[in-house]
Image (cartoon, rainbow, N blue to C red; front, side):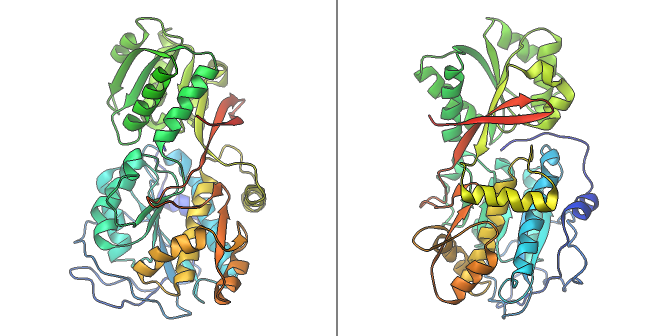
Length: 447
């Protein structure tokens, strides 16, 4: 996934808009060496505040099984501030949607579900610090997040795998995660960029674009995606006239753009977050008359791009992004999200966030407690067949089935949640174009 930098959103404002979370509290089965004690329960009416996490000593201790009726914490490790801050408020609305559904439908393990927010600040060290606090201080039973590939991988390497706690990312797409030596602790609900790169290459050729220039940010998201695109595009007969890796946060990209435009390719493929280098590249390319057509992935498909560049300058551009097939589950999610938050239009990855949070809650319910290894082992049991079908809005039904000793099979807002042995799902990729002040999906694409 990818994203942009807008004005930093205050954590307090985000929570005021997005969260009405219940209190927290859970017992420990064994002491975590060198780790602070869990904080006391919050009053039920107060949201849990996403404070910057101080670095703490990491311990590999299991969470105890919480007695029935106590509140259960789920960690939400999101890039609240940083390059993708513009995407976050609707995603936090999806967290609220799940939390409210669970608590209105009988709760989690007989108590309330509490969503505790940790802000990675969009940086690797921030991700490690926030994940450490969620695990050692908040004593969460599972983690949903992070969102960017770099922050997800950093948290997994330094906290999730050494500690032993289930992590489900709604949006991290780096191919590196497929081959992760993670002892089966790390999962995601979006397809790998190894797949999206191939899809983007095919779509580019199908759109009649036979020669492109390619630039990509030097990060864990963009570099592998660019390679997948380039390899497949050339195998299909496409020509890459110039390829430039660029650094983020540069004041200008005129030198890189001059190199990219030298042989006058038909379009510029940009794989970067709009909130970082992506917007600057498009803006400078247009200002200097170097490119008129741009091709990007979900990192560039940001409303900020339209706001700053103007829809008239993007009429020939197109983008790919993880999407969802038409289904009863997808329609049900759109209905319940729109009923609470008006609309799903141009709110990227809200379905993936909903699926990730509800899967974490269902795994905890299936495990019968908050023992982290049991929660991890329960995930495929509730997500993969066989089982009675459940989907968005079916929390109360799912709990009754679990209590009755029956298997369930969750089908998500964004498609099948059948995890393979690497913790990946198949997923689908959509083709998007600029439509007025937003983006319109005009089809699904396969390689």
